[in-house]
Every structure is written in structure tokens, then in C-alpha cells.
Length: 286
Length: 350
Image 1 (cartoon, rainbow over the protein chains, first blue to last red):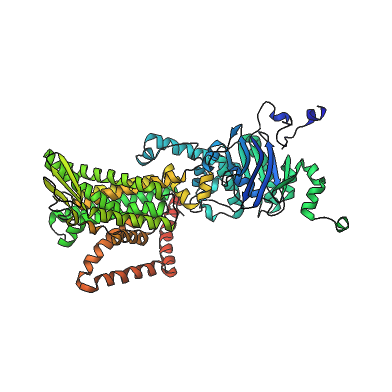
Image 2: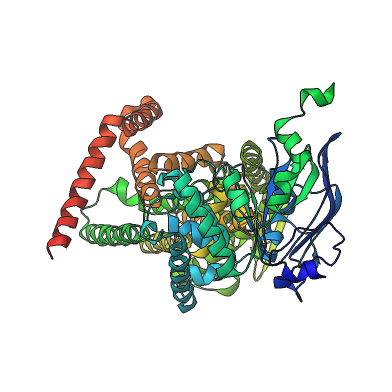
């Protein structure tokens, strides 16, 4: 108990949860619970026995060597792939029968490893797509330009600028998304995902292709987003300075299986993780 | 780069130019200074413009290749003709304007229903498969229409399949098509229909639904992840286009004294697609211009007699080559950026 008292960090804990719900989230149910989640492609188990629980306002990290199945986990969580084993719960709601669209409406938003913006649309329109299910206006009121249309457009415009301001991008609102520099495109993807009003934000390599300065800014922004929107964030990242810097808890995946879970310090000291990244010592083999 | 403001300006300019053209043409008709060929072509031009604009909604905005658009036009045309004949026979409705309005609405609704019915299975397909199925749909409609007989006896409608022994006056005579149609379509009605279709498409594109349609086109996976129901919005574009094609068909059908079912063949679908591609995929005002130009052009080439369609094809190829010429493209860009630059300077000064 004394251990829990001083704990200020959220935890990604094994399922079923052994009352490790962190102080900050006491009284809330976890936002995401996966138990024994898995998918097989033919005979290949791309993800196997993936069980995690995420607190309401936790920043979690998912790391692992290339091909470990990290993005597959994201695809399972957003139902791009249908899991063949296990269950997922979002705030206690079973996600078994949900489609990708339902998942988005239920509150999981994601960004993509290879950027998937609507390149031919402007920055503002991209964010407005994220607001699609937040601010509604039917087809006919759109065509007939009813008062509802003008109200919705105005509301969307204001909300868009507000969201873009998180990353100081309001000045680029009218630019074509495809013509933005790489870093800005990554940031725009995060803004667009935030616009869907998620409870859980999945970031797939948010710092890929960014320089150290930009990465630092991104780290600040991710923390800021968590504090401002009070959402959980799960991120895949290869940049260890980012992962160790902001993630409160880390889950390491190798060959589709979880090999370690814990705080950044625990992970850094874990021999299984070191082995997965660097390999075994020759002497040990002999 | 196309911002919201510049899109709005484009739409307003399109409306203004079309209204101006309408006024000029009406004055010319009243003065009888218009050539006979052009006068006879005005209504078909209007319906082909509506066809091109509606197909552009499917091909350009929603990004699906549909090769059966003439099928919807055919449905609209024949249901429009039947409605008009039925109203005249059964209800003694003499007012042509009202009859035309109801006929166009009926053509639109019935084509829309057909669009929804075919859209449900077809829009689950992607790419080439969609093109193949819509192509087959167009051919099926053509062949079905070839066998349908419809007659009006008082207020009741009779119909037969491969069987023309029907009481009353025949409205649809199988392979002979619609005969002795009262031509009630007017240029004014055509112009109103063109404006209507433009307002629908341009307003749709700049609304929440239109953005969702374009998002589904640009990146299917991302759009789904943002909570956009792809099938719903593809259907929305497809059915809206079918409704407008049906309306265009009704207008077209009611401007001809006779209309054969074989008129709406695969060739016409491709023709409309040519309008869309030439005007620019996704470029709505471009479709208007190219549909008008390419409807007039073959008539203007009549002096070439047998070589007419050959010359038409060569002209099309030339236009495609020229419009893709980097030199010409940069020239256009300079011309336009020059105008824009000047406007900006004036704004700065003011």
C-alpha cells in the first residue's frame, strides 16, 4: 500500500488488473482493456496474447524491434484488422462487433506511420474531416444552404482554428495539405485525430523524420495535449529519447509477444529487452 | 491551390457567365439572329451539360469510374415521356410547363431509385470492377427498354414485356421507342435545370457531406479512421448523380419527337465521360464548357461528311496533348498569377 501511495504515474498493467489503477485515475475505469488479443495471418501469429490496460490519462509507449507487430496492434485496436483471438473493451464497452467507423465514433483516433492526409484538400478541410461526427449538418441543409449549414460551418471553422493553434498552425489553414513540409504534415495528422474528440489517441511513430529540436517540441506538445484534453495516448516510437522522456509506461513487443512491461527505468534495466534489441552475448550462448 | 474563398468566386463567376449567356441567347432567339442548327441544339446542350456535371460528381468528386451513366439518362427519358403522356391522356393537363416540371421530377426520382438499387451492391466494389458492373448496367437498361411497351388508357397505365398488344394509346413502343412525343421541353427549362444541377453539385462539394465524399476519394483508410461511413457517402454521390442524369434524360426525351432506346448506348456513356475528362476531372465549370463545346463541334464538322467523327477524334487528341503541354501550362499559370498578383497589389494599396 505504501508503494501505491507515492505512485504518481499511471500504469499499463496486465489483465486482469490487480488493483494497479493509479491514483490519478482512481474512481475511473480504464479507458482500454485488451485481453489475450491476437491475430493470425494464415499460420503466422502476428500478434499473440496481447493484454494491456490503459488508464484514463496515461501516456503509454509501445516499442519493439522492426516487424514486432506494433502497427498491427494499432490496426487491431482500430479494427482495420479483425482480431482472431481475445477481447477489447473501450471504457467497458466491448469492441468485438465494431467497425473502423464505430471505433472512431466510440473514441479511438489514430495517426499513421506513413502519413495519410487528404493531400488535395486544405489544412483546414483536413481538420474539418476530423470534426465530421462532432459538428453535423445534413446533405440537404448543405445543398439548400439552410441556417443550420452556416451555423455548422462557423462552428467548424472556429473549432478548427482552435485545434490548429495547439501546434501554431493556424496560419497554414488555407494551404494544401500535400504541400506542407514533412514535420507539419505529421503535426496536422495529430490535430486531425484530435478533432474526432477521442478518449484514446494512437500515435504511430509521431517523431519519425523529425530533427531533435522538433522532437523536443513534439514531446512538450504530446504532454500538453494529454493535460489539456485529459485523454490517454498510446504511441509507437523508435526514438528512445522521446519514449523514455514522456511515456509513463512502456510495453515491449517482440515477434508479436509482449516481452516486458513497466516504467521506463524498469524497461531500460530489463535483460529481455536488451536481448531483443541488441542480441545475446556470445559467451552466454557457449 | 484552392481555398474556400477562391472556390466561392469560381462558382459565382460560373453562375454569372451562364446567366449572361442565357440572356444573350434568348435575345438572339427573339431576334431570330441565331442559326437554325444551334437553336435546335440548345436543349440537348443543356441536358448534356447536366449529364457531364452529374458524372463529374461521381468520377471527379467521389472518384469512382462509372461507365453506365447513359443508363440513368435512358430511365429518366422514358419515364419522363410516359409521365408527360399519361398526364396529357388521363388528366387532360394541357399546361406544358407544369407537365414538363412533373415529368422531369418523375424522371429524376425514378432514375434515383434505380441508382440506389444498383449502388447498394456496386459501391462495395472498387476500381475496375465498379466500371465493369456499371457498364453492364447501362447495356441491360438499353436492352430492357428495347422490349418494354407502355400504353395509357384514360388514367390507367398498361405495360407489357415483349408484347405490344395493349389497349389505349401506345406511349412506348418497344424497339421503336417513344413515338409522337409532344415536345414540351424549352430552352428556359433546360437553363433552369443546368443552374439547378450546378447549385446542387457546387453546394454539395463545399459542405460537410461533400468534404466527406472527397475524403473517401483521397484516402479511404484515413477517412474510415476519422469516422466517415464510406459506403454512405459514395452512395450519396452516386444517387445524386443518378437523379440529375434522370432529369437531364427527361428534358432530352421531351425535346425529341421520337426517341429510340438504342440511343442511350455505351457510346453515349463514354461520350459523357469524354466531356468530364476533357473539362477536367473534378472541375465542374470545366465540364459545362466541354459538354457545350463537344456537343456543338460534331455538328460544325458536318461539312467533312464521312470524315466527321475522325476529325472529332483527332481534335480531341490534339486538345489533350495541348492541355498537357508544360509550355502552355506555364503560360496559363503566368497569365493567371499575373492577374492575381495585380489584384493583390491593389489590395495592399487600399
